[in-house]
Image (cartoon, rainbow, N blue to C red; front, side, top):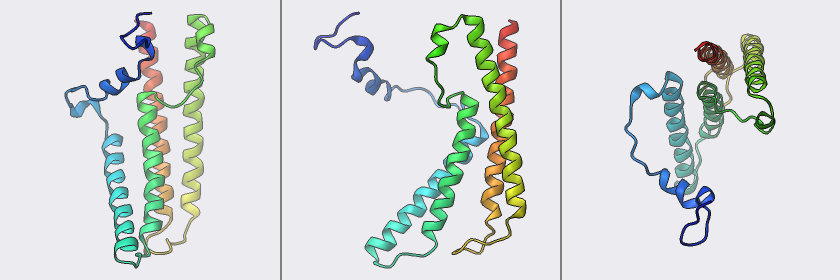
Length: 178
């Protein structure tokens, strides 16, 4: 392996990753999907609510009552909407160790089965969260909104995850035919 002037291998040079973070790639709206923009908006809402909570608690000395609960619910939404983004991009955490030692055909088969099982899981969780949301009639404590709103948002995120998983399977099958 080539070494740089300080004796580091180029493959493990931490500065390469740092410098690549500042590459100027052009922004294209088409590189992102609706769940990306939705997650961005909810994330900024979370930042604003937490900033308001910090300001009222530590600057004004009297915290508003609704910010903590709303921040909790916004964090839940960001997590599940972000999971839909990860399914679309194929960036969920997985163990890749065994793929390295499998023949190529077996690795593709195992990856396809894993995608199929994931889609089944997403549909099952969508059903569970829908039933939970449908049965929840209580209201949020500090805001006059139904708690089922959060559960329906999680349900929608699972549906999007399932649809994006199916989309990945279709794309995988198309690529295998070519």
